[in-house]
Image (cartoon, rainbow, N blue to C red):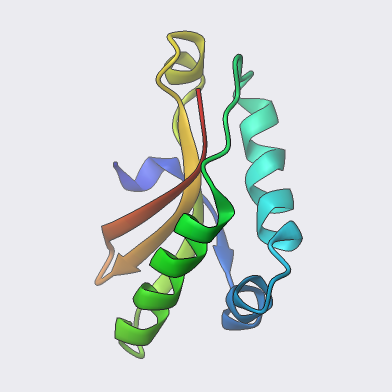
Length: 103
């Protein structure tokens, strides 16, 4: 994934809310970007899987790491390989991504 797919930075407070069981804020941010990509046949992976991966990322993250919402370009959704979710950015590069929506 390239940095052009990054759409909105997530605060640690938003990440903590997600980990406490409220994934709606992040899903809302992801969803706003996904709808602009015109998804079809949208699927959402299991919440427990995404949550456990996010817990591990937060536990292993460095002070300078950033969490971002990502959404692949519109043509990826039109060709049924669109992806959206949460990315961990370290030193300006995406080092890990958790998919929360795909088609």
